[in-house]
Length: 108
Picture (spheres, rainbow, N blue to C red):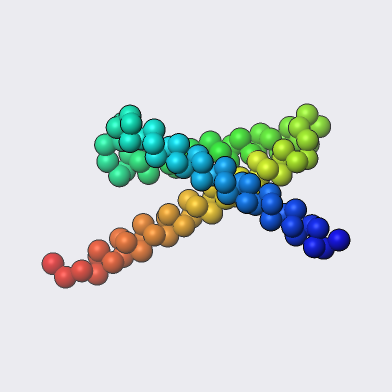
C-alpha cells in the first residue's frame, strides 16, 4: 500500500515537473522570438505577476472544489502547481538577495 502511494505521488510529481519544464521552454522561446523583454527587471516583474496569477488560479480551484464544482484531483494538481511556483519564487528571491549582499560587500 505504501509503495503504491509513493509511486503514484512520484508519477504525479514528475508529470507536474514535465509540465513546468514545458512551460518554461515555451516561455523562453516566446521571449526570444518576441524580444519584448528589454531588461532583467521587466522579466522579474512578469515572472512575479505570472506567479501571483498561478496562486490565484489555485485558490479559485480550491474554492470551486469546496463547492463541489471541481474534482479533488484537479484541486490537488492546482495547489501542487501553485506550491511549486511559490517555491520557485522564493528560491529566486533568495538568489537575488544573496547577489545583492555580494555586491554590497565589494570594495569600491
